[in-house]
Image (cartoon, rainbow, N blue to C red; front, top):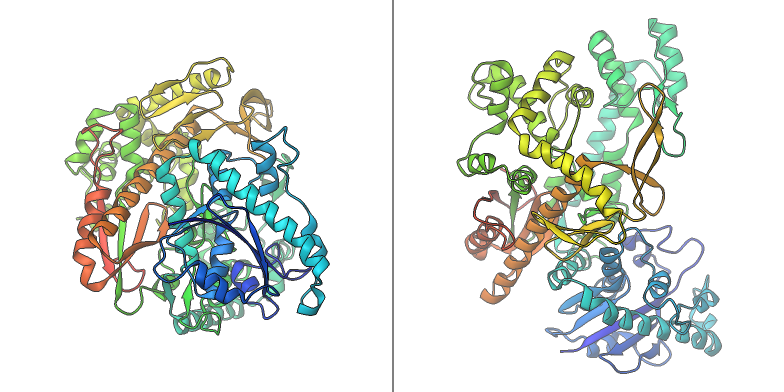
Length: 640
């Protein structure tokens, strides 16, 4: 077993680069080819091998033969591993990425190799990334790569490999071992492309979406250009129907005084307008259809990435996740395709197939944030209720309305149950009455807009929830006080239930940190409702000052430790698969869902392992915490 540090050098130019193209578009471009590779084996000096020195396919096949047990480390391993798999048909046994490690350690700092080197070795000018690569920009033909140019680029590549290796050595002692496993999973989900795309389904679904959009636009009597233009649409509504649509405040950090026309599907004024004028519903639907092409664009991206081609003969599709993409260490989307917001009703889910001989085990942690919020706050009564299977949505709604609500057994109770669900899932982080009422009106979490929720009902719901969940409410207040502690440079770290409080952040049970860089108490860019200045805690997120308070801190803690529960369980399952020789792997993660692909003959054992690990109480919690999960088995990504 060897640690192989590798860096591919590939042709690039003004219109051929990862700055403008996705990985699939770049690597699949007819102009793409590899003219050299830097390879460092264990501690040995980096070797620079060009297309003139050796047949790179043969060299790499000897380096990484089938069944090898080597670990590949790169800076942005998603790219280099994709080139290795998609271009050469080769794999490593394990993968490490120093760029992703940098994101894990410094969430709001640039993860580029050049900036990482400056952070790790601020005084050592020898440990710096060069810019010699630019001599090869816009060079696409072999004859353009002279010995002089290859020499320049070779020095650059060797330096990159050495920096990557030494960055790994510098970060590894401070990086949790289990998170290395998580990074390995993220790379394999992408580079190994373990999911097959049903191309024909996507093509027909796209045609269906376009036909539906064109029909809606035709039914409206307006042109698509008018429907897409907010000013033209507003003028038409006043001219043709006497409806006056005024701009509303929509403050941003760049423009706190920003205003816009409320014409998005979840704009409260637009929802009210649709309710008041149902006779114009054909126009409202056409407006939304003309203004949003997200699902059609996603179809194009699916086809672009997963269509059968010479470079992708089996029509597989990569699942890109941005490791520690959120400040709470949760994943986010990347590579211009975000699986995290793939709609539950989207037919594209059915286009993701496990492939011949395989099936998916789709697991979902049951109300993990609610459980972890109760555990962190010490709400023992709620933990016991979770263990007993209490339906908190019914429970809360019954208290609000004064009669027993049965949202599943009584169809007439669906609205009350929806209110209970919205409250139970939304009020845990300090949401106030007006925000809760607005959330209900917008129709959260797949529910229909609840415009019937007036201020009185919203107030009663918030008060009832807070009275029942006094421990969680108290945790917001305590977190508010802790912000002042976290802003003190000389504070001594201490544990608060599930996390360790540090200067400008807190440490998670995984060993990673949630960070609040440059934490300060200052005037916000946003005003209070009465126009007065708002003073609040803020931190620098790498781009702008972000407001925070105790409720947000609790939200950060709960989302972060919920992610720890999920990834620790997945890593344990991964090791059990290996120990038992089960051909199963994680192929996708969406919010609190973990999707595994397994051979059909191993499905029952895979289900058992996944269920046991997802419901296992973490070592950093005590038996008061009970975890639950649901499991579905399907050849496509559809839950039963």
